Each structure stands twice: as structure tokens, then as C-alpha cells.
Amino acid sequence: MIKQYLLAPGPTPIPDEVVRAMAQTMIHHRTPQFSKIFAEAREGLQALFGTKNDVLTLASSGTGAMEAAVSNLFSPGEKVLVVNGGKFGERWQQICQAYGLEVIQLKVEWGKAVKVDVVEKHLKVYPDIQGVLIQASETSTTTLHPVREIAQLTRNGPLLIVDGVTAVGVLPVPMDDWGIDVLVTGSQKALMLPPGLGFVALSDRAWARTEKAKLPRFYLDLKLERKNQQKKTTAFTPAVSLIFGLHASLKMMQEEGLERVYARHERLARATRAAAKALGLDLLAPENPSPATTGVMLPEGMDGEKLLEYLRDRMGITFAEGQDQLKGKIIRIAHVGYIGAFDVLVAIGALEMALKKFGHPVKFGQGAAAAQEILMESLD
Ligand SMILES: Cc1ncc(COP(=O)(O)O)c(C=O)c1O
Image 1 (cartoon, rainbow, N blue to C red):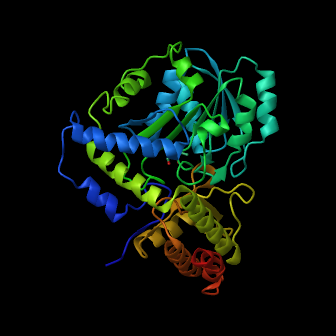
Image 2: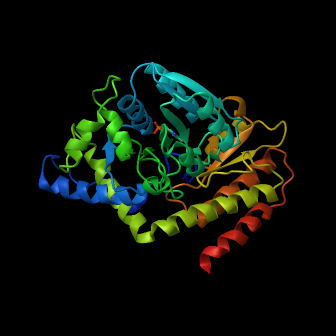
């Protein structure tokens, strides 16, 4: 038997409380029993998104919620600015292009955050930009973008549409306070659920835009969803079991307290970064690292794909690989969702052993000790 540890940035491990909630007998969704659970989950989501507006729950993965943001807010041919600093920035671009929008692409070097003054310049050069689309946390490069500062630039201008898939529930992204117009996430990250739910919330001015937006939509019609979800139901058959799980996971997050949830993610990320450095490895995003996942550069010449295979198949540890130009060169160690201090130690202990196996000089315990110094803070 090889015990399995899921330490990739989604899907993430699922707590027993959530598993049990999802195992409940199926109920009909047009009933007061479903509405009660759904109404409570909706309140929990509003606290998580930091909004007084509706957070809509969709039966889709995160990309469905991204697509809904685009198809509900724009008309064919409108100009948008896409910050493309990784695979998910690229996804915004692909969605916008699929819907016939004119995309101005702001390319950012992988592992770097977009510069606020560069965004500002683009908005000056193209004053007819209707929307800015960005990731709060670009999972593929383990980088945070400065969304709060960019929201200052868009406040009275284009809509700011933020993919918060590995940010919501990991760090504060209070959309109303910051002036974010659309915030999106998915179930299989900080929410500690299986994949299958997408979430999206709109500001008042984004809702006003939905009245004019002419792109085609049917299943992901947010106005229709809002009308139904305000009545504590959904337009179409919801993913009932996942919503049971959502209700349970939000309750867990409320009991821990959102501030403590954010502090835990930040601490686990710091511990992981310290461990990587103690092992002589560079970070992929040293300047603006995401607290959801740590990208670690592998020693020159090491075959990252083989290393990850070894970790997964021989040691039971699933990390994530690098994508595109980073394939084989990095590993991504996630600490998002139902992850605690000792999961980090498992990750680092296994990494030390795998690195040694692959020829990197490792003194056992060196990375773990650096992590432990930081993880001790949680015991104060
Ligand atoms: C930042 C980010 N955006 C979007 C997505 C896409 O979400 P999904 O795979 O749930 O469609 C992911 C998934 O990893 C992500 O990390």
C-alpha cells in the first residue's frame, strides 16, 4: 500500500465533514429542504467574496464561470484588455476571442506580476477598452497579480473581471471594497470540494452592463440565474450533492474564521518557500508568490517529469508539473484548501528524498527544518 497525498493546486483534498455531507440521500431541488441549504450557502459565499451582491453558483468548473463573465458582459467586437502571464491568462484570451471580442493582450513574463503602470499605459493608449481581465493568482506560474491596485485604475472606467480560482478563500479578495466588478472561482481549490461548481459575482455596474451585452448565451445566463437564485433555487437542475458539500465546507471555513484561513495559507506558503530555498532551489515567482501554490525551479538538467512520476507512483505524493515552456523544469507544491502544517512536512520530506534519488545533494531534514521554524508560529 502506498498512501496517497494530493498536493496539487486542484483538485485538492476533501475533509471528512464535506464527504459525509455529500453522501446524504438525494433530495429534490424544488423543495424547502434544498432552499434552506442553498440560502445558507449563498450567505457564506457572500462573506467569502466580500460582497453584498449575489454570488451565483453554476454547475460547471471554474472555466464555465469565466465564460459566463465574458458572455454576459460584452457585445461582439468590443475591446478588452487581457493580462496574459500564464496558462489562465491565456484562457481569458481564448474565451474572449471565441466570443468575437477584440483582445488587446498584455503579455507578462511567466513568474512575474503585471506592472500597474503598464496596465495604466494600456488604458491610456486604448481608451475604448471595455473590460480588463486578469487572474488574482495565476496558478500556472504561482504568481499574484496586483488586483487591488489595478482596481484603482478601473474604478470609473472599464469593468475589472478577476479570475479568483486560486485566490478566493486563500487570501482576502473583498470585491466590493476593492472595486472588482466580476469575481470568479471554482469548487475544487480553497473550497475543499470536488470539481463541478463554478461561482461568479457581479458588481452593480457589471449587472447594469448585462442589460446591454449582446453576446449569445443560454445555459450560463446570469440574469436568469440571479432571478432563480434569489428565490433560493437554480434555473436548471443544480449539482445537489456538491451544494450539500459547499454548505459543509463554508461552515468549516466560518468556524475557523476567514482571517485564520488566510493566515494559514500564508504561513504554509512561507514555510514551503523557506524549505525550497534551504534545499538550494530557486523559486519560480520570488517577488510575488501566490499563497496557494509554490513553484520551485528544479536543478539544471533534472528531468522534472520523471521526478514527479517517481513522487506520485513510488511515494504517493501528487504535486503539479510545469506547463508549456516550464514543463519538466519546475514543480508546483500546493497548499490550498484542506491543508495543514504536517502536509507541508510530508511534501518537503518526500521532496528531499526524491531530489536525493535524482542526484541532487540533499542533507535530510534541511528543508523540513526551515519549514518547521515557520510552522511553529501556528502553535504560539
Ligand atoms: C487561476 C485558474 N483559473 C481558471 C482555472 C480553470 O478552472 P477549471 O479547471 O475548474 O475550469 C484554474 C484551474 O486550475 C485556475 O487555477
